[in-house]
Length: 61
Picture 1 (cartoon, rainbow, N blue to C red):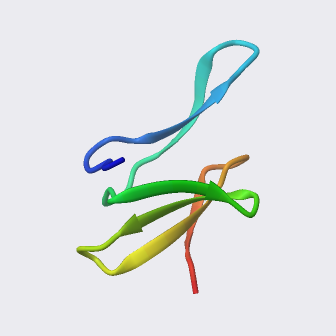
Picture 2: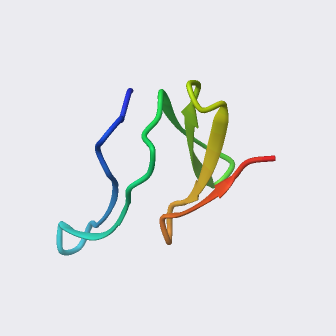
């Protein structure tokens, strides 16, 4: 999945409404694992670790 220019959204399954969105530089790949959502951006040379409960991004080290 390539997600340049599109937000990553957290949707409440009970109400089916968007609760929160992460808008960043975009990325080349989106994966789920180890309790997190991972977004990479090869052009920028970074990987973000997203907390799926808060949609808060941190750079992976």
